[in-house]
Image 1: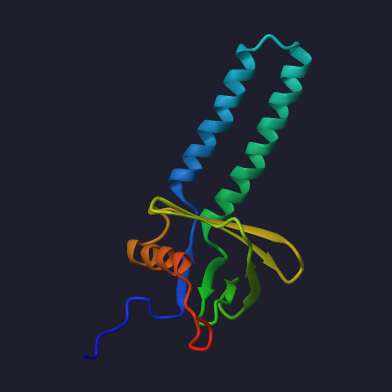
Image 2: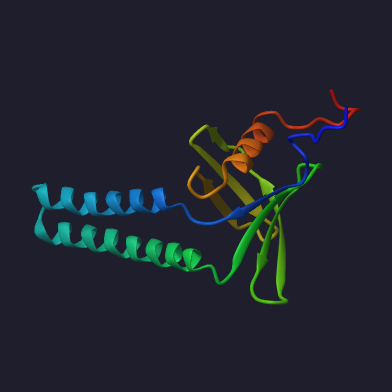
Length: 156
């Protein structure tokens, strides 16, 4: 019986931004502006909070569009020893490999997987995967792998 094991390691995740989350974040930001207009708080405070929401959205949209553009390709790798790596390909020959530690608070759900990592410099990185930004088979393998981590033969 020589079948391929469905949880073959390593798992490579070709990460790209989710269109669903992009639309959802856009609706949330503009919904917040709309709610601000309906409140009875002073106009100066409404303007200040509204400006903050718009600046936050502009920063988010810039980061989202830059990731969507795809000049730098991001690839997450999970190997047999539960080590995570972020592989960034900047161009034809340049490649950057960043070791990551998976932090507690990972959300694993059939519709969304939210991962939090800390890199070597201490920077916290988040990665949100949905069925529209990851192929179905990889998302399923990742969900199973996160829910049921592999144990080494010496560790029960």
